Picture 1 (cartoon, rainbow, N blue to C red):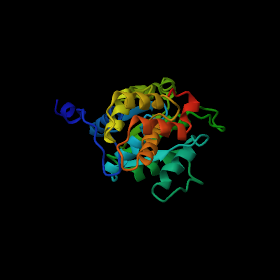
Picture 2 (cartoon, rainbow, N blue to C red; picture 1 turned 120 degrees about the vertical axis):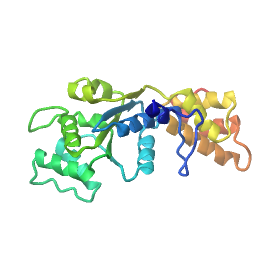
Picture 3 (cartoon, rainbow, N blue to C red; picture 1 turned 90 degrees about the horizontal axis):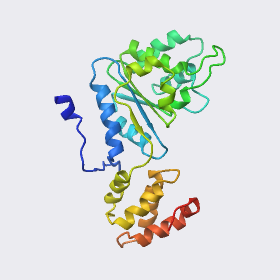
Length: 260
């Protein structure tokens, strides 16, 4: 029960010194990260969502808050095989040498570098689902990372787009280890409202406009850009719906289908 109480979410959005806002989605992601960190022994969680819901920003916020216990890596498309992944992780420690090492040795090296009771945050994890040319296997990095985490005693958080849950279905060993997955299919109005409130925008008209902006490709990034531009237009005045509409026009978001 005490664990549940510790992980209970707050209903009041807050912003840290760097401007991070604890939206409902951010709180959901942070709760899952906190859960796997609280479990005795290596644990795995999945964070999957549409572009622009704040996944990466939340992971980076989590790392800032736990800088000594979290390691963040982002996997580029085409670099999802175990050797590239190992190099990406080791580069965080100033050592990206993988030449001459086999996967078993690299797993041990990664496990030693990351170390016990830490968490490895793997962003753009859908790119791990890559066919390995030599072994002709697909997605072998998932199993390799799980094995490394079990040897090294660290936790894993796989974060990616909405294809990630279906990818996980291909690997029963991942399914059995997964704890409290988070799947967010679109930006919620609650999250948009949280960002708006930080700028003193609470009117229905303003939130409606920003919620429409959030549905475009880019999600909350669009909302942040519109608010930022509207603040420039407002100058010393309070930001209003008129300023927001002007920002939408200036950023040419209406050409993407936003109704004025």
